[in-house]
Length: 92
Image (cartoon, rainbow, N blue to C red; front, top):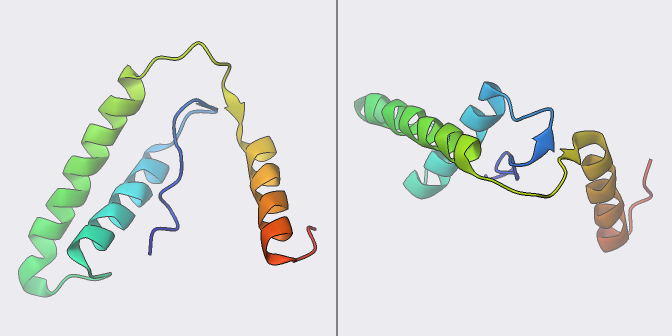
């Protein structure tokens, strides 16, 4: 359920609005315990996603670091290699 909650900070290029919203959606789904709200809860569910995405964008904008930005492709390759080692699957 939390597959889109990934580190979004200190990457080049920066996290997109879609990435931030996807992470917010997965967070709300996890906390609410549902992947799709009922019609009665749809409005409050969407409002929560919007608010969390908004706060997340502020957080990412306000964080500071002296570390150089990470490259998305390099980090994805490292994650794939770790997964292959952990689960014994050949990396492609």
